[in-house]
Structures are given as structure tokens and as C-alpha cells.
Image 1 (tube, helix red, strand yellow):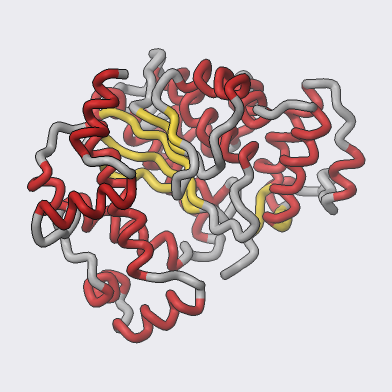
Image 2 (cartoon, rainbow, N blue to C red):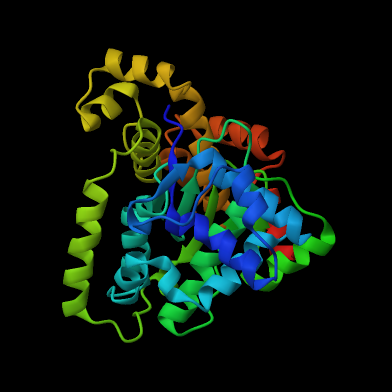
Length: 340
């Protein structure tokens, strides 16, 4: 598994926020080994671990437990900080198209994360997944989720609210939670496998205000060219993307089927997964769990329908698995959500 790199553009997000708060960033930057005064910022990349350490150091210097949310709000007033991603998103056809293009070109921010727009029964799930060995960085996750939501509201010219937002990190204190709720205005889930924003079908169809189709062709081609110069997607992201599609539609989630989709033999795929510390069984279970939660909370699918889509032989097997994952039955979770 590669250590990953972060772009100058990504590193500047927390730096600009810290400077806006009146902080001197020189010492934190030096401690992280990051030099921002470079001849060509577009060609400047830094170790991903250093970029994550910088988020933490600046948040601690600011004394702000929701520093990522603060950074997202400040960045939202400076759309040029997104670089080519801003121009691609701003000229997309609708919000689904914009999110899809951001996911496609998200590697221009940093190449260590997998950013995807995955279909979901309730709409689409815009996810941000990082293979972090030391655990999730809550400030970077706060920024990512908030940036998508806040920027999206400006792009579509409407105050849409996500169906839910998930985070890998643990739940914050009640005081901090208020800041999260003020930004997202939707159910929040913590301790989940990935950071993500679930967007409804209706919001995905919202047109982008002032989009220029002719300009889109130009900036999209430029973004594609920049991405093609970067290393390829990780095996982890490719397998998870396939499994999500398969498990959402009742498709084949076996190793053999994944291997065929990726043009790899089953043995080679299994060896590469093991080399990366990944388990096919664990990945299937994890994705089934997340899909099941969202199906239960955001759709009216029956237990039999959910069991079929998720690849269970029968509904009782699905119900046992759901109880193991969530600690309650689908009916109990739906009842609790309805009461809320």
C-alpha cells in the first residue's frame, strides 16, 4: 500500500483557514516538513502523513475541535482554492454530474483517498475513504464532508439538506455536535467505515446555476489530462466500487466475478488483496452493513427485497446479520427513526 501524497492545493486548505484565524503557520509547517514557497504549486506534492499531521497541529493551535468545519466555511468564500475542480463542478449539468466529476478528479487534491459517487436506493452516496493506519483524522473528515455540502448549496442555488452524513471518527461532544448539526442539518452517523454524504434523487437532479456547457468541455479535458499523469486507483477502491454496485443490485459479489471485472485471475486478485492487508469477506460484510443501514433508514424496501439485493439466501439470514451489525432489527430501527 502506498503512503500517498497530498497536493499543494490540499495543504493550503488548513493553512488558509489558520491564517484567517490569525495564526502563524510557520512552526507547524516546519515541524511537518512542508515547504509552501515553491516555484510551481501545481507540481508540488507532499507526504500524505505530513498533510494530515498539519491538520491536527493547526486545529490544536486554533483550539478549535471543529477546525475542519471552520476551514470548509472559509474555503466556501474562496472558490478559486479548489483549482480546476471548481470550474469542472461549476459548469456541470446538474448536481449528480458535478459530484461525479469531483469524484473522478478528486485525486488532484490528494492521491491517497478514494472519492466515489456510489448509487444508493435513496439517491447516491458521495464517499471519501482513506486507508489510514493510525485512524481517521477528524479535522480532514469534517472539512471534506462540509466542503461538499456547502459548495453544493452554492452550485445549485438552494439550501438542500443531505439525507445523512457519516464519519469514520467517533462521535464528538454535545457542544461540538451542535456545530456539525448547524452545517449539515441531517442525521449524523459516527464510527462508520467511511466519511460520506447521502444525497437524495431530487437534489441530485438540481441543475447547476449558470453552468457553461462549452466551458465544461475545456476544463473537463484539462482535468482529465492532469489525472492521467497520476498513479492509478488503488485495488481497495476498485474492489469496493465493484462490490457496492453488485450488492446494491443483487449482482455477483464473488472473488471470481470481481476478478473478471478487473481482468485478474481469482488467485492473483486474492494474493493482491492479502498483500494490501484486505479481506474479501470483511469487505463484503462491511459494505452489506452500510447498504443495509441506508436501505432501512431511507427506503421502504421489505426484508425479503433487502435480503435479495444484498445476496442473502433468505430473509432470516439477513435479519440475523442486521441484528449483529446494528444491535436491533430493521423494524426497530425504522420505528426509532420514525419516532425521532
